[in-house]
Length: 110
Image 1 (cartoon, rainbow, N blue to C red):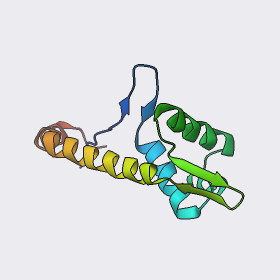
Image 2 (cartoon, one colour):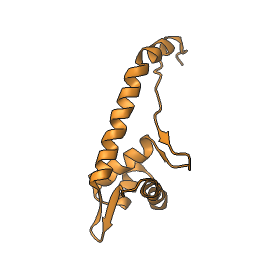
Image 3 (cartoon, rainbow, N blue to C red):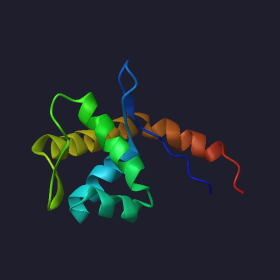
């Protein structure tokens, strides 16, 4: 059976977005301790990873990561943002889970 998935992100009126890709990047920075290592782990170009992080830092009043000569770490706000995103995503999935299951039954298997 083919599974139906929900994609979750939020955005601002001025074009900033937060979705699974940016959250995965923040989690990878936390895991690997640097933007370049996180980018490699996710198969992203370093410049693209930095653009995504910079977009988040421009979006929010508080930075999501801090960099130093030793690497990068999530700020307390960055860690909170990751947790909030996952909480919102789970709540949305709970809210529409029954409808997703109905749709899934109607999807052709390939």
